[in-house]
Amino acid sequence: MSFGGIAGHETAKQVLTRAILTDRVSHAYLFEGPAHVGKTLTAVAFAKALMCAEPPEPAESCNACAICRAVGRGNHPDFLLLFPTSRLETTDEEGQKAVAEIEGSLIRREAIGQLIDRAYGRAVSARRKVLIVSDAQAMNEEAANHLLKTLEEPPGRTTIILTATSADSLLPTIVSRSQLVRFGPVPLAETQAAMTRAFPGLDSALVRSVAALSGGRPGWARRLLEHPDTLAIRRRLLDRVARLPDQPPLVCMRAAEILIDDAEAWWLATSEGHTARELLKRNRDRVLRTQVGELLDLLVTWFRDLSIAGEEGAEGLLINADRIAELKRAAGRAPNCAAAGAAVSQAKEALRGNANLRLTVEVMLIRVRRALTAAVPGPAFP
Image (tube, rainbow, N blue to C red):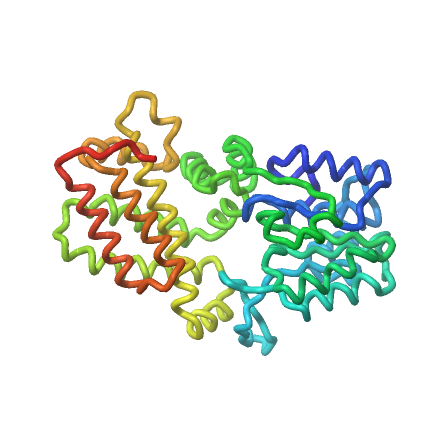
């Protein structure tokens, strides 16, 4: 992918393009911004532009030469893309060792050692070596200090790109030796346009909803649209919550079980099949806490929408744009959306600690049902 195929981030792309055009490419960059906003995608596009054998124009890549194709596959000898990995390992269908990224994963000294070896080795075929550390805030202390030595004495014709959610999460000495490039949330219109181009056959209201749900993170939106099972899970989740006020309290216990099952299905839908199943088997609670958190984020947007759906002119502000009619019907029967949303947010926070997963979800749903059947309206949603 070239810079032109990346949604948003015009300032960042201009900085990188100008660096190539003026031959002032830094030995190290730090791409700072929210998760799934496009930092790593931009880093790979930058790598292609720096390494392409047949650039169609300066500061662009052809995406067709052997180097561009190899970088896209992640197997060019002058290119490296590191992600955080879990200690949990498994074997895929072909007998190859595999790992998968889950919350709490780290980048360890061994991985940074691999990057350093690549940095100081001879270039094989590209004009420049490009080495990317995605989610660099996941480096443990030993790995960070190991990388620092390379940034202090950078090898020639090599560019190291770190991506991180915040510069504050890295050693100040690493930040000071890198050129900072900031990435912010992509505007809704740009995210929606990018997803429409990528998925032209999908319903426009659904694409808009996913773009809005992403909160300016095109990578997150793309992941959902690429995995239709996640869209079905979202639909079932919102259907059950919409029916909750009409159900007896004991239904909350069964609904909690189903929500956790859906979290498992969400994980399997967005991860590599055999590897995902093995990791789920070995560390089920840790994986499910992360996935339940993603589903709870969907519920927060639902209650936010429900709190404003009855207001005049609210249609253009609704995140779940594919369910506008349902939101309008339910708005008048949901008196305390603020309390419902607060219950979901508090449950998500509890799950980051050691709270019991099943019990936390049950209590949350009981509180949600109570809020949605309360007689007295609550305050405006924060």
